[in-house]
Image (cartoon, rainbow, N blue to C red; front, side, top):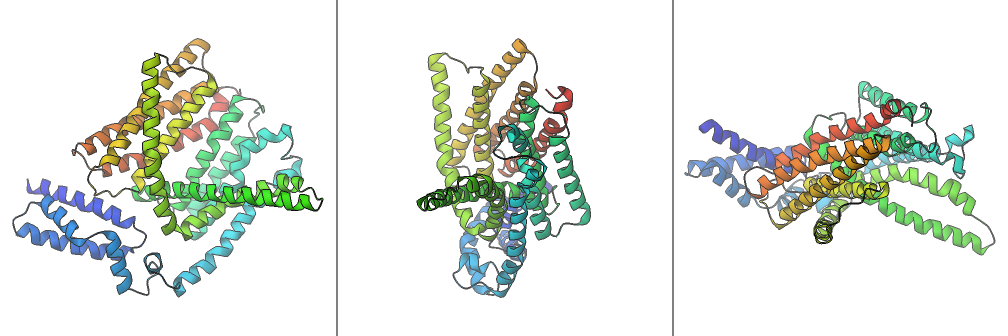
Length: 457
């Protein structure tokens, strides 16, 4: 019995420690010092007659919030780099030195990504030509993501073995996108254009994690980074749109047509460079965006939950199922992906030690609604396959919806257990981080195997 109690206590402390390590304001040594304080308080309380779980909760409560602890540590250790994240002041020498080292490397990688999209022009491909659109769609992720992976490989000091494996997989992706005899209007070409960026982005994740892809905590860090990167990339895109409009307008005022320059250089090269710049901004300004991203998640989660519930009510009221047209099914798949993204980012930003609240119940409603819709979409896809037979598109849709169904179903079960107080939230986080391997395996399967299985159709 004592062993079980010790195991439960260690599990609670492990969840608390995981949350501590996700606070970028605190160094690893600081987290260890705080954990020592926590264990000392728990020991004092248990010796006073309290149970382990009671002692843990009281000890955490008495230690105060991590925001207060971060400020206290910042004042006591004024030379620390992370003081700039919680207290105003000039950057210290270590911060300035790191910025001076990383900025030129980032600029170099961004320039490589920007120029890479112009390389196919040396071989006769034209961005503005309709005949070459399919080529650029299949290859656009190969222009920027290798440069981004190289930036993280340098920043994380990856070993030659990991770099070699990543480089080999990038080469395999490039070969699959260009060596297969895919017609521009084939389904396999479209599927490659959709799934290759996913496969390569997860390779970037390995570089971001410093090659430690087995670590659940590092995988969750990458999920958090992905959400923050999307926000920065969107902001850069909005700024780029304003720049493009002003460029076109000002040059038009003096009788110069800048549309060719904008279409051939500014937009494509700027978009590729923004992939690397957005990642650098996440790393350099992470304390700012960490406050924004969870707020956006809390705003859109109830909105999406209300929309999905209203949609299900409308289906029941009208007794009308989901239409089986291809564009409609794609729309629902995108909706499910967005819901999954909201779930993942909400999990990555959550305090693992906090008790279930209203927002958790909203998330449970969102997941259950998405699960029901996924079942309806699967039935529609199965009907299309029964009527018309298998094709690359329908097979890919079937596989992806089965993968989403598995993820959503188990997530709903874990969420229900957490809301009812029967299991820790950390189990849901571990499930999501481990499931990343399934997405990676499926993306590579579609890119490498589908063209062969379906005879490049």
